[in-house]
Amino acid sequence: MASTYGERLAQALDLSGKDRQDLADDLSISVQAVSQVLLGKTKALTAENSVKAARFLGVDAYWLATGAGSPQAQAEVPQAWPFRASRAEYERLTPKQKEGLDAVVAAFLAASLERQDDWGRPAPRGVIEAAESPHRRRKAS
Image (cartoon, rainbow, N blue to C red):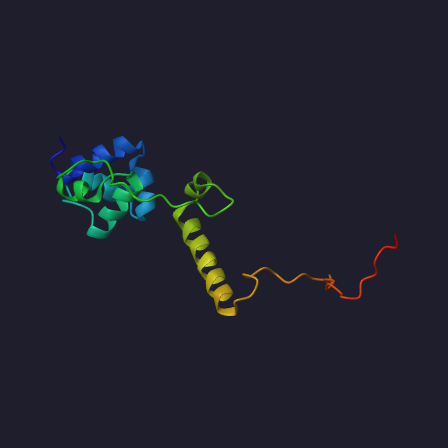
């Protein structure tokens, strides 16, 4: 049983199959900062980074912070992934790329919801859409 925060963080890394650099990248901190926690030279991550680390590593945040309970994350209601790109593809992005994507999606949603139009779909260029005419010719039988 891991008793210190650093030991629990090391166990969480092992359970997740991720390494120090993965965690550092996700938290936008240096790998040296992660190493300091793992070696016990720093008592723990900030509360915010501890919760982020728990989510990233797939362990229970309360267990990581206190050692009480189990490392298995509490079951969350899974949400369907709403994009054509896979979650795995998204996870391969760098933190900067994820931040940029988040900004683009947020701007798109804000603009689309404000206009209540066809959800931001670009207007066709050089194409005249034909309207249905009530005076269409019918084929002679």
